[in-house]
Amino acid sequence: MKTILKQATGGATAGIVAAFAMQQFVSLWHSTKGRKLQDGAFGLDREADINAAQGLWQFFFRKNLTEREAIMVARVMHYGYSAAASAGYAVSVGKNPGFRAGFGTVYGAVLWLVGDEIAITLMRLSDPRSKTKASHAVAFTAHLIFGSVAELSRRMFLDQGNPKEKSGLRTTD
Image: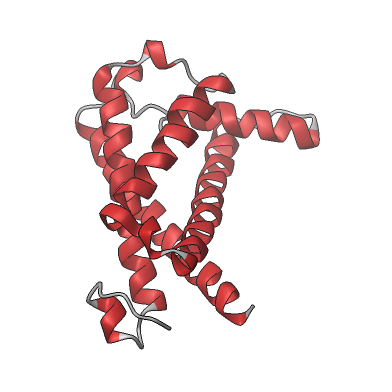
């Protein structure tokens, strides 16, 4: 149990670091190329953030947020989701190292497909047809960055005392 808690805690911390790296990449995109609404990173843009925060707040508190409040709530939701998903990822990797395939990029790609393309669309937080192909591509790239930074951070936080694990070699512990 102690090992699972350590893995989950390390994974959650890695998820927060990865979410920050992802946010920096998306912010760079939005400041240079994604200035128009249709070019914003699908699922990671202001539209999806505000709609998600408003929906959650309406569900729990039956009131609307200001746009500024919605952006803050959305940021907390994004970091919370990143921490929870990465905690699950770290525990999964602890049980089956194959989950770290592609140095976390497979994990990032799955989060993009399930969390952005499918969930954002099904919850009607944003219309994928209203966005450009570049919008979807930058969201996919952001999630690959997220996955690889989550894996790097997970290794840094959890594999500190195991040089074989740091090198990528499997151990039999």
